[in-house]
Amino acid sequence: MNKVQEILSKLIGFDTVSRHSNLALIDYIIDYLNAYDIRSHLVYNTDKSKANLYATIGPNVAGGIVLSGHTDVVPIDDQDWDSDPFEMIEKDGRYYGRGTCDMKGFVAICLAYVPEMLAANLKRPIHFCFSYDEEIGCVGAVNMVNEIVTALPPIEAVIVGEPTDMKVANLHKSCNILTTKITGVEAHSSKINLGVSANFAAAKLINFLSNMLDEFKLNPQHELTELSPNYSTLNVGLLQGGTAQNIMPKLAEFSTDIRTVPKDDVDKYTKQYEDFAKQVEANMQKDDPLCKIEVIRGNSVPGLSPELNGKAEALALNLTSENDVIAVSYGTEAGLFQKAGYSTIVCGPGSIDQAHKPNEFIEISQLELGALFIEKLIRRSAS
Ligand SMILES: [Zn+2]
Image (cartoon, rainbow, N blue to C red; front, side):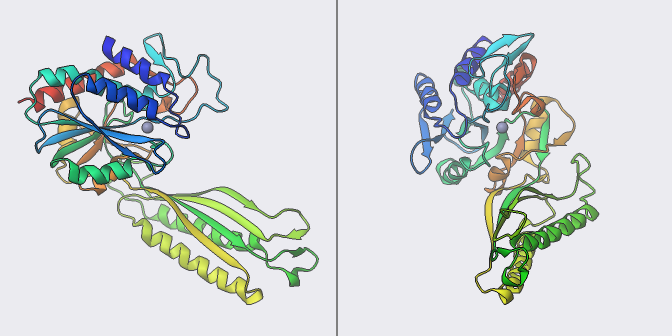
């Protein structure tokens, strides 16, 4: 555990809040792996200010296991911390610091066990895939996943080490962001015949979304008992429109997220909404042709679906000695790996209850369970 502690403490010291570069942390990992003659492959973002890193330990053959983690953390803005978030401290059997739980703890375990991996004479490889920008919608990993599909030999399973208390999660919803921008025509509120209200159009669109949510509630995916709620959801989280009480608003804008269960096709529902927006726009344009409604599809994180006889699930249940799978309420990069054709589950140390909060911590006992998982994986990969 000393080595995990030492590495985790280093990782916490890098301020890798998603809006910053993660390259200092990536350089640290490159140097660390270099010392063991392990080559790092980098997949950069467009301005080369951030990078994913993947690396292979053991023979470059088929049947490897991917251990996946993200290097970025959520911001500390407006959070009241009792200690420096970027300096790890140990207290009461816990390590405190931003990212201890989500999810540098898992990354630290992976790195700490490199010497054991090398000593074990692996028959099949263990691959590390460490990403950036997970916390802003799993955008960093996309290019890395695309690259490893051709760059790495066939992979048996992907373990995404997000905090699950070392339970095995085979399911989470997709998350899809939409932004709706409405342009009407401004007029004094006593002269409604001269204007077109963007807010009234927004109300119609939001009512449509509200009805869609009612429909989702009536169609739960019953077999997904571990998922709560077990139906698709949507939310209008931010709504802005107008400038003054006595002015018909010219501009309105709102953002929506749609989170779907596996049986619901998010494209179908998005298309229904876009079609309805076209109707509302056409009605507005009867009053003034300058009126416009734009529905902008934003980031989309694919869901993770339970696999029939999934290899990753069987492997993780075996390594954790758990009997049952769980669902998680948050999105992860697991959906990206699964969409690329890999058998994938989520399983990692720490509780999501501590993630993203001030005084984030991970129980040392959770790191020990995570380490045990990796030890068993090493033995399995060596036999
Ligand atoms: Zn995370």
